[in-house]
Figure 1 (cartoon, rainbow, N blue to C red):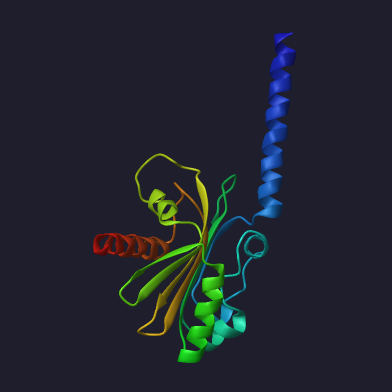
Figure 2 (cartoon, rainbow, N blue to C red):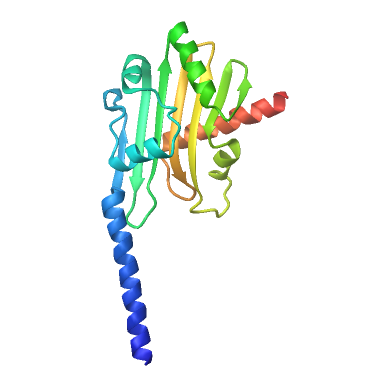
Length: 195
């Protein structure tokens, strides 16, 4: 009897592991990819495309707009075997006055909350500063997933920085992503001190 129970448990474990493996192989591409060439903006794998279309609120500009005014671009995707996929997309774009005002209106319509420091306005379309802080709090919240959609509008330079990410606390992120988010925390701390 004990032998049959052990065999049944092994069979259930094998089915569970096969299911996880198939899910990772077919739904979430394995591996890591980093892209910085602006002409490849918008060319993501099927998992990121599906996420952007279903779980995000269209903060990122179109491919044509990014090609016209994009200055700096970084896309990073990572998924380990039996791991959670994560990605981040960073785009900095400089615009003329008319395009900046049009984009500011588009972003404002999607913004849940924002704060300002001097000429900078930080708009959260999804996520919050609390979510960002969780990534750096040194607590064991590993596995806590979050979606961030953030735009930083620099009114003096007419520049907008777009940041979209699906991140999991405890997973290694790209250094550029960490630098951007830590700068955001410092900016928020400045805004709080100025109040």
